Image (cartoon, rainbow, N blue to C red; front, top):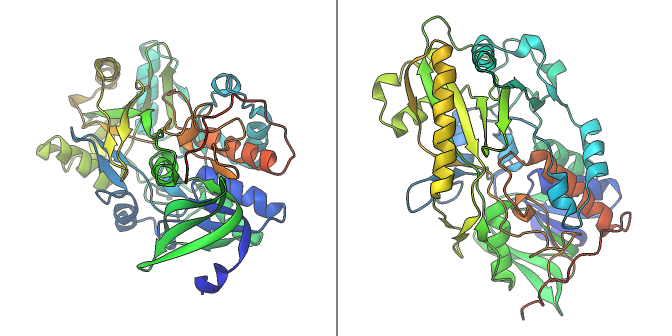
Length: 447
């Protein structure tokens, strides 16, 4: 069926269906443009079970990447990308950082905020464990507040489990939703399609090459938008003739700090990251972090806490996510070569020590910290260095729209920022918005 589809010439071929790609596809399709979405992952229904999570976010070498020092980084390989499995927390956009590079997305973000279900949790959705941590942190002087969540709270019911493994109740927003809107507006989707490179003619992007069903295919379009994530987009660009991407990036390292309480029990409807605090000067944030039964076991096993395997319901957990220093490199196959610096480790240790005091005040015992992970890598295809203020690369009609274009680390989940960039890109592409003049990018390499 897709063989006939690929004979067409599209207005835009969008590679990846995370927040950036899905938003761009939706906005283009709404404007009557002919759009093809290519997604590496399988377009299976959202079941919300651990098996789906395992196959779409924890496959070593694909969705689970390890550094040489065994720091693990996860990404969702599925329609919707990592947003299918994220914790649905909305953080402020680094407007100043982007404006310094000629990208002003204030209007686009304001528009997104009106369209999306963003807001702090209703009081009845704050569970006893999240509330215990909040009260303890405030008692120690922290400005611990409810966090904005991407959740349709009117759909929530007390018996609903949070969508850690994808949300079949459609309470948690994910990029599958705008991808679905794009399809309803006439866009097409080919799943299980791994894009290898962009096809160029006379310095212009005209399509992409991808593999599906053990065959190599090509799809052609007037514009190509790479939205394959902080790792995937850089790898595709290298194979296309831009070798200097994938260097000096960030990946937001995190740990969690756990303690056991005897007077509370985790409820089925715990919502992670209900509240927290961002310590900008210290370079990290702290939030509550409830985990489901299976993930709690994985975290305990990673640090050999075998005696804690059956204490999940008694566990209070705080996450510390740090703003790491730019560094490292990606391999040509997408391997992650980046180590924590002494500065990165000091931030995580500062957070750990503070979290211990919060948990102790909350009545927790047997406190320990977990293995270091990393999430949403970015800065591999930076604005001002690899793409201009329109998000166009040095090749005409080839754009990038995902976390990879964010030029500096700021230690926060980037979902709203990337959605705003998706809207910005489409307005620039369609002539609705004149992007600020950017410094010329380096000349394109010969394709």
